[in-house]
Length: 157
Image (cartoon, rainbow, N blue to C red):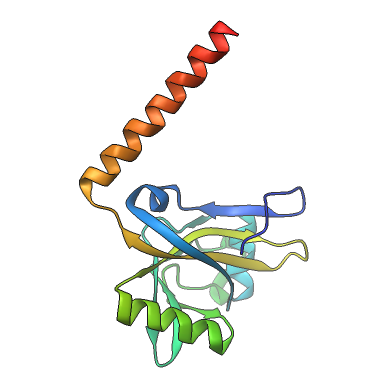
């Protein structure tokens, strides 16, 4: 489970669209295998996880299509912005995720990329199921009604 947002936990990137497009069943915290220039870019905020996803390759979980911008001061020792990055998980967690993807047709969606209290980059990974169009419309109507109800209560009381 991802920790609550506190002073010590700093979010580098967030995938807001994921909660709209998918129904998140479970979240798992995973570490990432990164180079030094990638960590510097994360700290500078040059990251986008909106179009990324996680997949299984060779018994390991990999983060695909995550954009981490180049760190200019790295020079020739830099990194490729969209390279696949290995996620660090326990073997029991990997087996559980692979089973969910293969048997239940779930998708592994990155929700948030952040630094924990120790300054280590972590990824909050969601086991998700895609929403249908009518489910998205219902969620939007409910969100609008909650907003309107809050305005009415605030004005009245």
